[in-house]
Length: 39
Image (tube, rainbow, N blue to C red; front, side, top):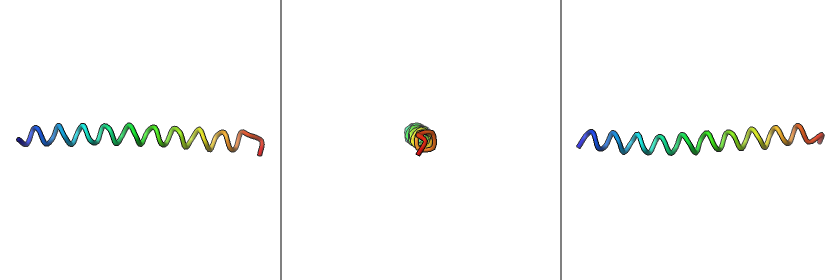
């Protein structure tokens, strides 16, 4: 039971981490493009 909950939490955190990395990467790209756009 505890093991199943641990796996569930790990899966949830893995998905959250992936989303976070994607969001940060997109934000960095957006900011970089904004500064690099000559504007």
